[in-house]
Image 1 (tube, rainbow, N blue to C red):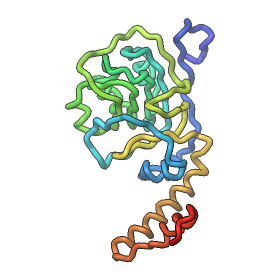
Image 2 (cartoon, rainbow, N blue to C red):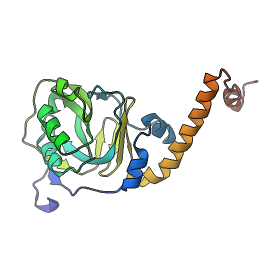
Image 3 (cartoon, helix red, strand yellow):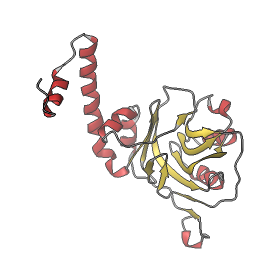
Image 4 (tube, one colour):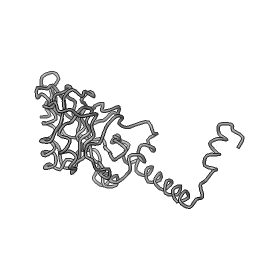
Length: 230
């Protein structure tokens, strides 16, 4: 499927990208999305998505397999499902359209059987009762009972825009109760010590708060930087 020159306009399937090694993936499992977001400047990540898997403790962590589809059409998502490897996260650019669902319960069954970690959908899902059973993460813009077409066009493993974030094939995707974040593959290794240091700082602050000994200087220093007489 890698010979894209032979594909008609609007259709393309590129090879799966492996760009984050297994040790780094394992190190990021359990890293809160908020910690990664804070360490990346607090202005990145998806907006407007809802978790439909109904398990607030479920943590999503895996490499992105990206799909761009025509709104309301899921032909290329089925292609991506057949390409995906265990642990992959299928990230779908459906242009935020909510008129037709892009994935549903039958695709969930396939994804679980293939060991896929989850879906991030800039579009709609359906069969909510099945997704709520858990076993796989799914974040989407919304839901509808109206099903999709299977006509195309679409592309697999291309850079996409999904709910306000840029995602390239092979990027690290993190998801938890707070939302979804994509980390560029080139930044994953340098981000790890930053999120660990961030966690340590929060642990120290939390311990002080629990002990009833907050640190006013933490905020006074910020006020002085603004010229406030404290």
